[in-house]
Length: 217
Image 1 (cartoon, one colour):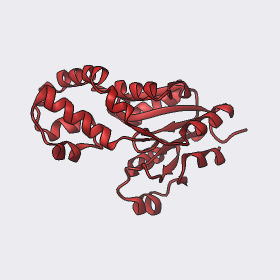
Image 2 (cartoon, rainbow, N blue to C red):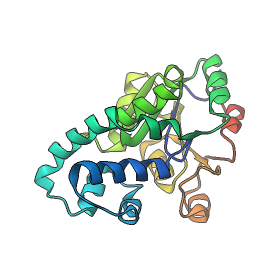
Image 3 (cartoon, rainbow, N blue to C red):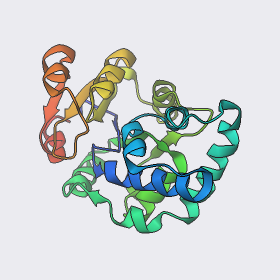
Image 4 (cartoon, rainbow, N blue to C red):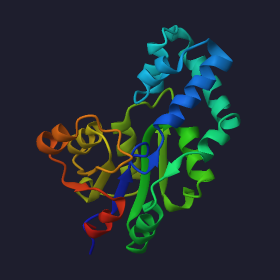
């Protein structure tokens, strides 16, 4: 018997190195499709939801749904070159293979857009390793709700879920949802307050390499 039935992974900063990727995507989108912006202004908003990024640019909220649709089309047609540049954690495939061999389901729950998450996993040949992929769209930005949707769909009790993420918000999410939380303190992490995350939020586990997850199943 294994401790978990389902392992959910955050994506950005957890098993892909993507901060620069997202900066380039939004810089290209805004400058080609919306309005001129600087890379510095784009970079300041990365790490937030698409809605937050639109707001940081001073865009009219009444235009958000339309802009989101345009961004989806843009991401499906104009960013494959940037996706192929993304660095993938070296041990993620082996980690997922072992988890799969144990009969434990895996899922991705990310604040990246659904179409972007799907495209990244496809172009890096990771799609088949996950039972579910939940990204954001204009009506489902709430990551907590999407985690619960995935959990229920894959038939795992809350106490049988491990959520793996690289940021303090991921550990807060796991705790609030009743999951065990694993802080991925790897070189890819986007975490800005490591000491706070470790000493105050107290994740169930801390790993410095994703492969270490295979030792806590």
